[in-house]
Length: 74
Image (cartoon, rainbow, N blue to C red; front, side, top):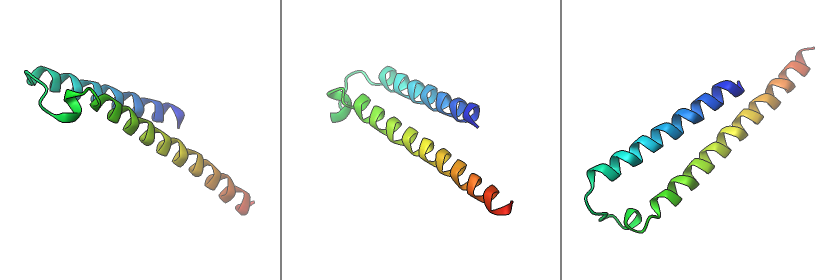
């Protein structure tokens, strides 16, 4: 389960990196407020941290529920 999660997160990071590189290549001058101030990377980092935290929480919750289910059937 951990390997699948790590693989999924690495693909997410690679996708985010490729999108950010494409955005920098297509724009001559930063006209967007968040991109112009460089805060888009801060927003992306916060989103990645929140999504990673949610995945970790769901994995732990699934493990606890599975453990409870196995305990009730014995």
